[in-house]
Length: 289
Image 1: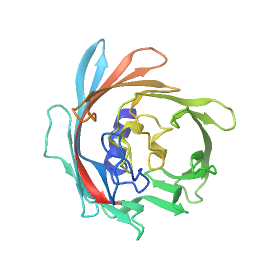
Image 2: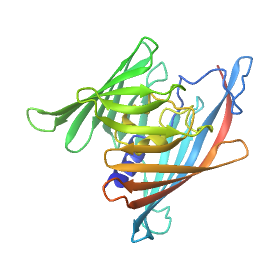
Image 3: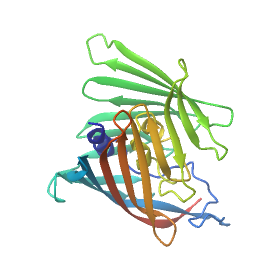
């Protein structure tokens, strides 16, 4: 169920767009670039193959191919998702997804087949609220920052879709950062329980210029902050209360990951239950600062 949820999230929410918060002086080789332009990385497509593992036997569970199209401002304009069980098929295309921006080029809503699925609200250039609408719940995530504009808390309020919109739960998460300024722990504010632990490699990420980060989709405690949190390195391990996700990467000559292999291990049984292989294509474009 978790992997199917990830694919659905990918289709409707985790679309790739350009972030206004990337380092203006950064270049793909890690150096600096003078002048009035900068280089950014655009992910063009990704193919995700999910394998179920039982008794050490791998069975292809699902395949999804996502292609991204951008407008002249390099904002996401449209996408095509093709998916099948077994062999890759281009026949099952899901479209009708609309991305709505304000005059500051901030994403403010995502619509699917004319129905608003997500809304985003900003204050002083920071995302402060994200509203998610699914079949059974309305979920409101509110974000709080420290004086350095670094994410400090996430308040997750879940409402059942009943006549009186009863609040079902509230969850407040806090974040612990390592010396490189990367989140290493997600902690429950009240109980101090560690929801998730994250470790990273030292290589370049494909998603630092993107509005969403596919690598954050494995953990429920991370995917809700991917519009805010921009790790400059790739995630190696995510461990939450139920699963441990271990990722390895293959890099091209420019040092970007073009293939990601992630295994999903059940913490209780210790068994590896799924393996996901994702390949990416991308291009580097030069834009005005």
